[in-house]
Length: 589
Image 1 (cartoon, rainbow, N blue to C red):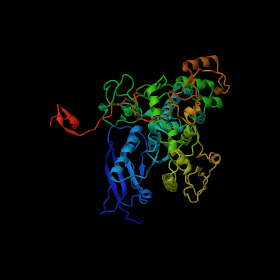
Image 2 (cartoon, rainbow, N blue to C red):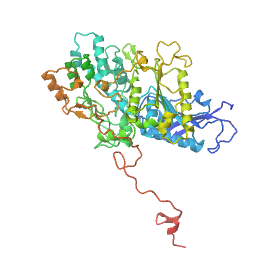
Image 3 (tube, rainbow, N blue to C red):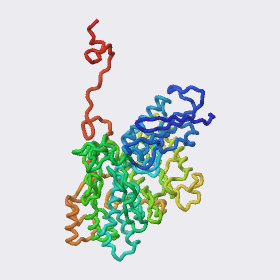
Image 4 (cartoon, rainbow, N blue to C red):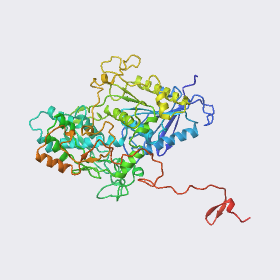
C-alpha cells in the first residue's frame, strides 16, 4: 500500500504528562475509532525517556516522535513526559500513564493490535517495570542500556556513594601509605566489582544526590585520578521548586520532600510518624563489603575490617551516617508484591535487550569528571537470572551485546524493531490453547537469538555483514563485552541483584565465605561490633521478598484499604431530601 507521507501529531495532556501521538494521516478522509484510516496498521510504539527524577513541575517530553522506521511502516508513535524517567520515578504511576495513553488511543483512533516499547537507561526501567507491574500492558519491550528496575539499581547508587566517601577518608588513606595511585585504585576496583574504580564515581556524580529530600549542594568526585571530592555548584532540590517551598528539617518540616520514595508515597505509604516521607527500601545491614576482594587477596583483613566498620549508611534525610541504613519492612513487601522489583512475571513479555558499552566514567581533565560509566553489562544478566530463578528459563529474553559506546549501531536498532514486530505478529496469530508465556517462547522469530559483535569485527555497524557470535564464552573474552560485578555481588550477593534487605546469620569466622582468611582476636572483636546482629545469609530470600500480586488488589494491607460496597446504578427521577431517588422508590404519583 502506498500513501502520502503526511504525519498528524496530536499534543495534549494525560495524567499530568504532556503527550505526543504521531501517525500517518490523509487529509480530507474521515477517521473514527470504529473506522480508522487504513494507513495506520493499529500497532503502537511507546518511547520511554531516560535518566531519573521526581520534579513537582510539568515538562514537555524529551522524546522525539519523528521515528521514520515506525511511522513509514504504519505504526503510531507515542510519548508522554510522565513516562520519561527524568520526570517521573514512580514506576506504578508510569505504568498507569501508559494505560491511560492506550485508553485515549482506543477511544480516539481505534483498537490497538499490539504495543511495543523502546528506551534507554531510565527508559529501560520504565519499560521493564511497566511490563512487570501490569503484564500485558506492553506486548513487547526493547530496552537499551538496561536496568531491571530502579529499587535494586538504587542499591548500587547508594553503595557507591558510601564507598567513594570512604575512599576519601583518613582511615582509607592511612591503609595506603607508600602505595602508588594505581595500586590504590586497584583496591577500589576490587571492592566495587566494576571494570575500574571510576564507575562508582559516575554513580555518585550522576545520581548520588537524587534521594535528597530538600535543598542541597552536590558532593562530586572532581579528580579523575585520585577520586577526590568537593561540594560543587549552587543549592538546588530534586523537586525543582523554589528553595523555601520544599522540606527543610529546621524551617519547613511539612514541606514537600523530593526523594523517590517521597514521590511515590501514594504507593509506599508514609513512614511512621510522618505525612510527607515515603517508606524506603534502602538497606545495607549485614553486608560484608569487599568480601570477595578479601578472599582474593586484593585487600587485607585489616582493610576489610576497617571498611565494614566505617562504611556507615544514611539518615532518613539521606545524609551520611555512621549507622547502617535500615529499610521499612512494609516498603519491602510493597516493592516485591507490586512488581516494582521485576521478577518472573516478565516471562509473559518478549524482550530484546540491546547492550552497548558504558563501564568507565570519563576523566575530562582540569578537575572535572564526566557522567555515566554506570550502564554495566552485568545488569542484563541480572534480569536474565531473575527469569531463570522464577520460570526456569530466560527464553523470552534476547540479548544483543555490542562493543560500541552506550547505544548500539542504528542498523541493529532497526533490526530489533523489525524482529519484535515479527515476534508480536506471530503471537497474535497463535490461537493455540497454551499460556501467553508459552506462546512467547513458541513464536520467537529466527532473528530473535542471543549474540554479540566483537570489537575486532570490521563490519560491526552493519547487521548484514557483522559476525554475530553466539558463543557467550567467546563474547566474554572481549574486554568491551565482559561483565563485571556490583559492590553487593562482591559482598556475596546473587547475580540477580534482587535482595533489597538480606536475612542475617551469625558471624562465623569459619564460614567458607571467608575463604580461610584468618583474623586476629582484635579484628574479630571489631567485626562483631560492626555486625552485632550477624551478616547476610545470601542462601535465603530477602526480607519480605514475597511473590508478585500486583498493585491493584484493593486489599487492606501496606499502602491500601479495602473498598466499600460497589455503587448501585438505577434510574433517578428527581432529588428528594438532598438525594437522588430511584424510580422504584417514588410513591408520589
